[in-house]
Length: 189
Image 1 (cartoon, rainbow, N blue to C red):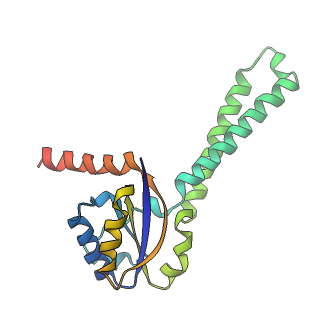
Image 2 (tube, one colour; image 1 turned 180 degrees about the vertical axis):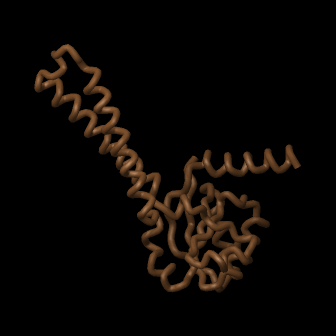
Image 3 (cartoon, rainbow, N blue to C red; image 1 turned 90 degrees about the vertical axis):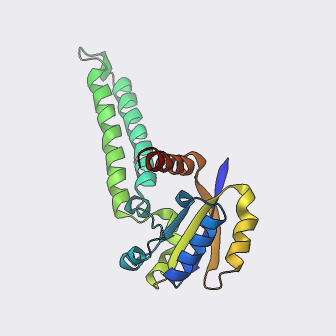
């Protein structure tokens, strides 16, 4: 099942905190809700808001995957060129070229990750100006049946405005975070 990500924007962190409380009261679990803001100290003062991790603010995953695809292409190029040039027919055979191909794959993947550390998450580019203006972005990943409930709750909060819809995080990630946290907090108090 795919989750849908609903985005909301507000100027006030306390309004978003109240909004998150109402969502929790409606049965939406914490790993489904995140706050994106440039005001880290203000967000830290609101303990009920769950700010996204630094990892999510960066484009590491997407850039690493792009680097890996480029690495696969470079590795294939090394293997094809070495075969067509006849270099694999030498005494060394395929082994040095296979190692070179693996090194190319690793290097390009690593470079992609380094590039991603420097770049903001591409999924949040639409909100760059709002964040620079001091506004805060709140998003919720929901299963398909929860959309109406979310709209009803959002209508009660005048300081929170709807900002768009996108594909959400994979279901297994969100719910494994929830169940893993519950396991450790309830099993090992």
